[in-house]
Length: 179
Image 1 (cartoon, rainbow, N blue to C red):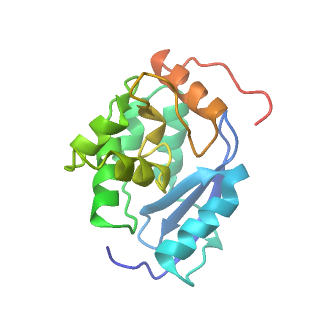
Image 2 (image 1 turned 90 degrees about the vertical axis):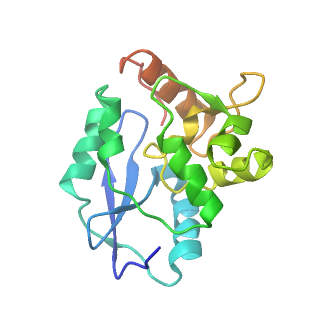
């Protein structure tokens, strides 16, 4: 993956808390996280982009519109968002596999490993899922435990529940009060 020359950080409202959007000079999304996890986003950016720090600025209009459309129930809108991020070949395979899970559906970590091309690498798939820099666009909230139980989510379990209910209900999930 080529290294961007510039990163821009924007903030967008959502029903589940402010979203942080990091894009590059070409308007490609490089990271997306929630406001209360800004420290994790910063750590991720340092890992993948070294000393290159995002400067305040506007995310591409198309990215913001896609995010708004997702929260209004047009889940496919996020599939049109161009993204690129640094990571290992396996991590990128996992993140790409995440983008192919339809809204309203869930898969297990073992299925995620299979879809990423390494069916025996279940723990590695879980770690890659946990290191996902593109929350919502690469919908890691759609991955659940083998027994069907909801497992951890970097944005918090309440958000995971909300996102799954939002998608299952066709975009009519309730609002979270305290996020």
